[in-house]
Amino acid sequence: MRYSTRAAPAFRPFATIGWALSGRRRYLVAAASGWFAIVAAAFNGASFVIYNHDFSSMIMASSFLPATISYMIVLVQVRHSA
Image (cartoon, rainbow, N blue to C red; front, top):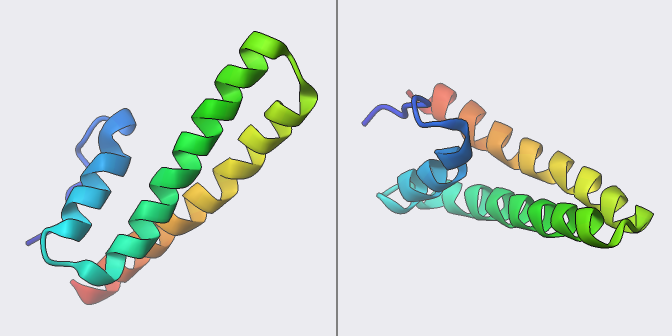
């Protein structure tokens, strides 16, 4: 099975987790941690918009890095295994 990144950008985390669950268990931890970081960033982004606290913006921005790293790990492993 070949991994496709044709999903809309908003659905790529779910596509990655679904792909990891479909028999590629070694990618599940990286995909799930990336999804968790995106949820944390979204929650703190919404908190920043509503309450306008600077720490919410900082947490939102710092959640981007783990999400990016975990999805890059999955993509690099997939390209090397294909």
